[in-house]
Amino acid sequence: MSADRTCEIFVSPELDATWAVGTFAHECVHACVGVSHGHRAPFKKLALAIGLSGPMRATVPTAEFEAKIQEWIAVESAYRTRRSPQRHRPPSRVRGY
Ligand SMILES: [Zn+2]
Image (cartoon, rainbow, N blue to C red; front, top):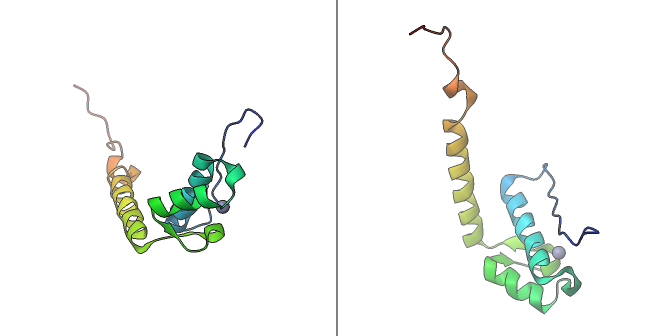
């Protein structure tokens, strides 16, 4: 929590995408229920509801949540492929009209 009471969540860019989303989800649960609850009942209730499992201090996505994350990654990858610079390279010469 920042001095202005803004929740800031940082996720290591070194995590693979699935692990990063699971970590982000875990941290979002903290932000939603309030960090003062730690990993106790309010945290656990929301974490389980959104598809996190395992020990609450080290949650992991359930198989169902992980499948959904993989779907999101596939959609994002397809979007990035369509938007890649190679596919939108400007013409090698500009025609005058
Ligand atoms: Zn935690």
